Length: 508
Image (tube, rainbow, N blue to C red; front, side, top):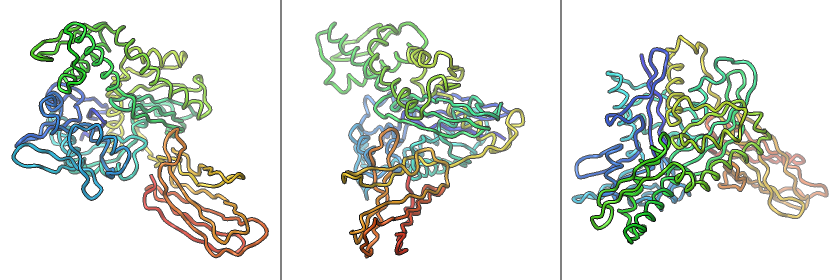
């Protein structure tokens, strides 16, 4: 009996099969080991993968990309708004849910992000079944650490809609550690591991504590403004300037020409991870003129120098946040396609000169391999190396904060549950207010990553009809967070015993 691990990324998806005690990534029908998360709609068919990506030049308005950005989000969500602004495909608001408007000529279709994701999962399932030669449904799906319950459920439902039996959702950093068996071979002792994931549209740096085979996230940082597409765009701009220098035509204002250059730059970027130079050829780039240009790895590194520095900086910031130095890190795990870039690997190695940099598994295959190993554990088929059951500990995905006022009256926020707190968890906090007040308001917020500025108010409780007194009111607040991310909050005024309670269905 086999099982599979699936990594559904923002730009690419990858699947690994666990069989006979090992996990291996399998290639799709085009011979590629990763499949672009791109879906193109035509009159009577939907195309998924590399063919849809290449055909986007002619069919951009009906081609959906980066659907994971919008999956499980409301129309007003900032991430959804960012996706809508960048999308070539029209996105409309329907019952505060984003929907794609697809116009193939005869009829206009309204497509939900869930339907798009389901098509991608179906393609992944076909890839796994073709490689195995038999039907396979048991799967472990990876999710970003910052995903809330709603996003996780949307991803799970899309996978189940494609015919998968989802054994478990696991966080991407945990899958990366499982791929290398970190903490499994020597289950005793404590160590710290840094997981560096640089994908197509996002950078995630995570510091994890490994203790007796248990993984705990100490801190994580995600930047959606940095990724492989940033490097591709920088190279495409260089190619456009080379074309202008040779032919005296500026194509930067021509969307179709720039899309052709982006495709060529993307191929060149991948080539430069293994070779010293790459040839970029674009047929009929502008007004029938072909374009041919050679780019060296040194030129590419120079063009992306500032972007590389931006990609490395969060490592230093995160280590400072958790109070660790580079010497406290025992291993660095590289994952994500853009982590294959030699210059980036060298910059990370320079930060950790005495630390083992794990890249023996191709970085864009690390996460699905870890997910497949987890699937094997859950099915009890790994008799060779992992005999013990794995334990999944749910964690708080975002910081949960309480709003207070300092002596000057300015707002201040106290973190009750830092992101990564194992759930269920309980916190008690005493809020003080002047005795002259007859009512006191408590507010809870959630934030994410290194930015402690609250992003969303979760709950507000008001204690009314308090008896005036000379000393301060002491409000004892008890906050309980369950495994599903829900919050139960109770506020009690110590003097009178007056209390109020509220439950927030899903907090993260």
